[in-house]
Amino acid sequence: MADPIPSHPLPAPPQRDAQLWDAARALEANFLAEMLKSAGLGATPEGFGGGPGEDQFASFLRQEQAEALVDAGGIGLAESLYNSLLERRK
Image 1 (tube, rainbow, N blue to C red):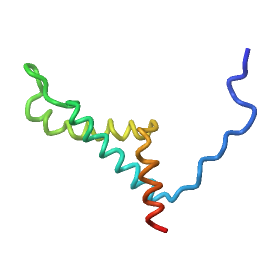
Image 2: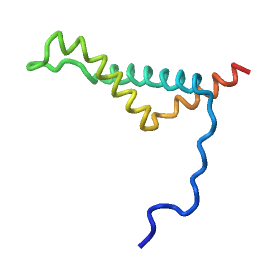
Image 3: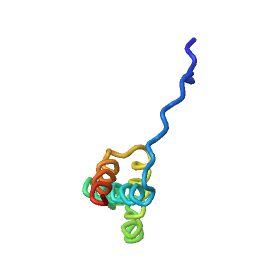
């Protein structure tokens, strides 16, 4: 049976500027929240919907789901944004 834990150490993640990385992740989360909104996630269903209260809080749900997507690796947009911001800083 194969050992599930590799015997060689994993490479360390690259050192990043925390402020730029947080900004890039926030931008990716906001982008994903807008894409989820455009896809209809959180739209009040016809018939037995939650009414105006559900409409009021749907954006919070979308934002949390978008942030969870970013935490799970996202779509790579944060990495691109981070590299672009880092280049502009130089």
